[in-house]
Image 1 (cartoon, rainbow, N blue to C red):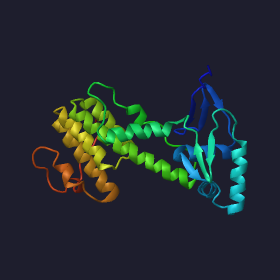
Image 2 (tube, rainbow, N blue to C red):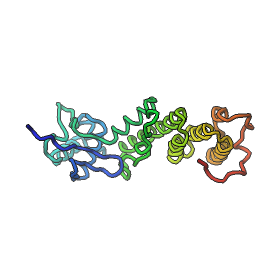
Image 3 (cartoon, one colour):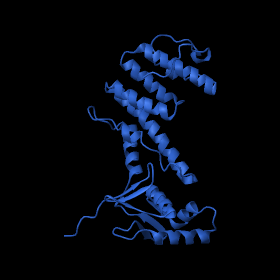
Length: 252
C-alpha cells in the first residue's frame, strides 16, 4: 500500500509560505510569484502567465523566464504545476488558504451560516491581507477583491448574528468592518442595529450622530435616509451637518 503523501499547502494571506506537511519549501522569488499567481487562478495559459509576471519584457524573453522558473520549481510527487497543451494547471493536491477564505466569506454573504450556536468565523474574516508588501498590479487587484469580499461578509455576518439574537457577537463583526473601512456606512448601520437589538437606544443614536459628523468632515455628505430610518422617533434632517458636541469616540 502506497503511503499517503503529506498535505501540500500554499499560504498567501500574510507572508508567502509553501508547506509540505510540517516542512517549509523554499522557492526563489520568481518561483513564489509564479506559484502565487497560479494558486489564485488554478489554471492559466503560458502567454497570460508570462505577460503578467514579466510585463516589461518582450514576449520571447518573458516566455524564456517562465520556462526557467518552471524548471527551478521543486520536483516531487505530486508535481506542483502540470501542463495541458499551452495551459498550466496547479495540482489539485495543493490547498490554498485564499480559497478557504473565499468559501467562508461567500457562505456568509449567501446567508449560509453560522448555525445558531456555532462560533462565527470572525478569525477567518479578520486575518492578514493577501501578500502584504507585494506591489505588482495583479496582486493589488486580488488584494482589493478579497478586502471587499471580507467587508461584505463582515456586514452580512453582523446582520445574521443580530437576527439570531447574538448582538454582542454581531457588534464584534460590525466593529471589525468599521476598523477595516471607517467610512463604510453599512458597517456603521450594523453597529447601530446591534445596539438597538440590545435595547441600547442612546448608544445607537450617539453612534449615528458620531458617524454623521465624521462623514461630513471627511466627505462633506450626510448618511443615507436608510440609515436614519433605523432609529426610533424622528431625527433632525441633515444631523451631521450642524456639528455634534457630544463626540467622545466610538462606542461599542
